[in-house]
Structure formats: C-alpha cells, structure tokens
Image (cartoon, rainbow, N blue to C red; front, side, top):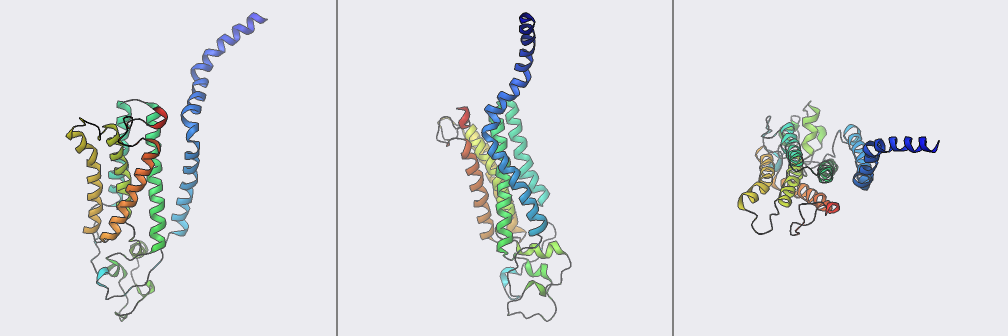
Length: 276
C-alpha cells in the first residue's frame, strides 16, 4: 500500500542519514580528495620494505685507504641518540603533540590533513634517505675501526671491503652509509613538520604573536639540530653528511606542510586550504 511504503521509507531514512549517509558524506567530502595520497602510501610502503629486505642488505662499497685520516675515528659502541630514541623524539613525540592539539581544537578535517601529512612526510624522508645512502656508499668517519682490516693490508693503496675481517654484518656494512645522515634527515623531518605546524597555528609572522609562542614554535627545530649534532659527536658522520641530511629532512617537511597549508604570511595560515 502507498501509505505503508511511505511509512517504511520514513523509518529507513533517519537510519541512512545518521549512519550510512554520514559515512558516505564524510568519505566524499574529506577522504576521497586524498585518495591519491593513500594510494601513494600503499605503493611506497611495500616498495620501501622490499628494498630493505632484499636490495639494501648491503650498500655500495666505495674503495678506501687505511691512511685516510678522515675515516680513522674510533667506533662508538653507545650512541648519544640510538635509533629507538630517534623514533621517539622525532616520530612519536610530534605525533602525540599533533594528536593532543587535535583533541583540544577538534576539527576533523584539519586533524585528518595534519596527521596524513605527517605520515607522508616521514615515509618520504625515510625512502629518499635510504635510497641515497645505499646508492652512494660513502664511508663513515669510523670505517677503519669497523673494518678491522687483515694484517698486512697495504696502507697507501685503495682497498675494497673484502679486506675487512669484522664478523658483524650490520656493523661492517653500515660503515658505508654515511651520506646523508639518516638521523639528521628524520629529525628535521618529524620535528621540522611539528615546528611548521606550530608556526602556522601561532600565526608567528603576524603582529602580537608573542615571544613565548615564537620560542615554543621554534623549539622542535632546536631539538632536531641537537640530534643532528650528536652524530658528529659519535663520529658516525662528518659535517657535510649532517648538513645535507638536515636540509633534506627540512625540505621534505616544508614541502609536505605547504602542500596543504598556506604560507605563514597568510592570515589563514592556521587552516588547511580546503577548510578556508
């Protein structure tokens, strides 16, 4: 009966509007415009994993000489910032800050864009850094200490890694992953992204921004710089490696942030483009 069909439709419509309709609307308005970004992540992640497992088990090995003073530094067994703490300082910490900020100023679209950008930023930095590291194969400052060359190896001639006797596969071959500094690129990628985000939220280039806001916004940059400097103290890299790694991470974080947020000079720099 017509009346019953109308009654049935009226009963179904609220359910559709409250759940299915809402999900479809959110997908179309908030997620679908970024489908290409998610597809890109779905492609780059397995490629990066496969490279780590099958291609980058050993880097390219540049020849070296035992009398090269640039690679005669001692091998530090304990690092100032191990990889685990690097992931915490430059990965987990910025993520938590961005998450807390999102809960404090709840804006679903802004939260989505900010966290998506942060993830893309870190993954792209890791991918690019690892490809360059393993392709270049530049010796670290502590290479000879890692190598433990065979007795009688010529000191004034170029030799290959086959002259090394260190049985620890990772320690030995990681000695040819000096350029660029992965710690530096990752630190300036994660903490740099956080700094750019805070700079935009505090409208730092606008009048009356306040000194304390400026200090808070720039503090992640300082943290990233200290992590990068620690690589010099550990003799894992020289200044050139660290500077290039820092510039690489900073450039990627700035590029990803600017992809969705206006310039700091804009009055709407605190909001992503689609929300303006």
